[in-house]
Length: 314
Length: 314
Image (cartoon, rainbow over all chains, first blue to last red; front, side, top):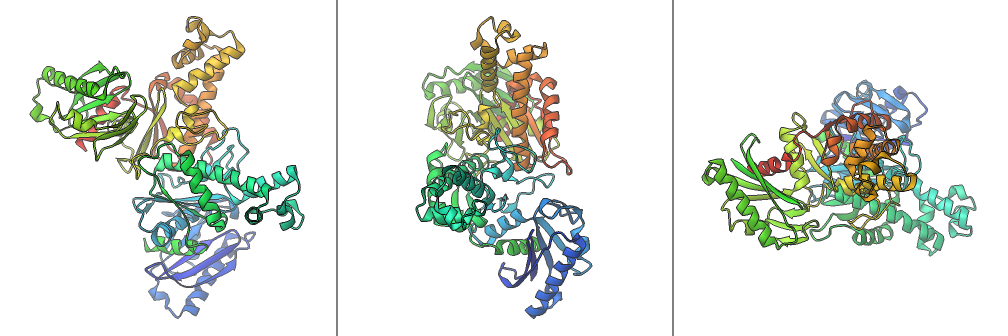
């Protein structure tokens, strides 16, 4: 058995996971990220203890603990090098957690971990290479090549959200301009929608957001577009175009067997997937030899726990 | 011994290459690309025979022939699927060449082949992963991961020239808009320079091009910039900025150990490399864990022959 921990900016989720990647039991606790890392990591220990107690399994049966980190980490040192969302720099997470749980600890980026989970147990099963895009607040990516998470040489690769997609585009929090993430994320979708409503006025989106422009989020856009609101449809079409053109870039770069769409925005389901596949087909450069299957992620929020457990399995 | 053939739009170059990748003897012949593929491939056979005769080696000592193709190819079928420059679609190159040379034939994309040569014998020696950018008429790329050419799943990956770099950018011949190649290639550099001279007038570039704007090519830009012509300097700076931002994208995607700059534009040498490295350092997102070494290619035009021979070595 393994324990997988999904460390997020809002919640810490953890689960007891069997060899096959099934979650036996899971639980979560608020991150309360303004606290010191010592306090947060202590709560991770408490969470794990609680899960083990309720599970009826003994700690002796746990072979290892994996943690998905919302940032850059160095597994060899057990250190979170940088996690913007948590305000962490060089946090010795493994060392700190060992105070509470005496097990081997493995860490990796959360998007890598989610990509691994989809590859092993979700939409990526049966493919030798897959790239999972987690479209949430930001745009994360987990690259699986030859059946393994592609780590890069310095542990900082696989950031598909940060290739330059518009050299003259808006400022990104990475310091550069026009990163793909600025066009494809829940944040980008809501920003586009808020702008469109501000410009064009009257839209169902405003109504669904209780009359407050700043409350128009990705879900509101999708809901309004489904109901035929033309401003929302236009915004969502544009979003799909940006997603498609980035996916074509990924195909031209990696030519993977599968591209998997996860994260909050993927909850739009077929309403997103169908026009997306059409748009990719329309714009792809070279189609004679075929290209990646484009699919929706299957594991939802559990991908974080399952993938983290799988890195502990190794 | 192996034979490496570098099939280009202008010339066919071939060489006899030893196990270690040294060229023993080489020769070339014009492609005359308006001819049928049968005629062109026959000339490849004649070229190989001529080289063998002058070399003093016997055909029995040749273990295989490798060919670098300016396009997409399917090695398993020995077919050039698509080569824009030659106007080839589904050309059975291996089958056709076997009429003249009875040896195992291997084919791969020319930029992959050049990347392999640099990895094995040039600027990429000692690195486990490297990406070679061949900046010529277009922008080719050869991706080496874990010591092997990264092939993609459908044989069409590794086209770094065709990730979207400017979603609102100029038309690319791949059908999409704003591919990186539209900003980083000898063609792009000369187009920028011609535009700048058209707008700003008086530049040493015009003089070096014999007074004809349309004769301003990449070499003219570099020569004029070296001599302090401010219009040329501005254009070359902009080119370097585009190259740097694309390299940062590659680092964020692949995080390779080395990035190697080859092709005609790389002849600018340190005049290109030094400001390029500075620009990358200035704009890189995450620098604490280090990033790829950026180097000039070392094999020049021979990379095509050597790399082709190396794919025959396998």
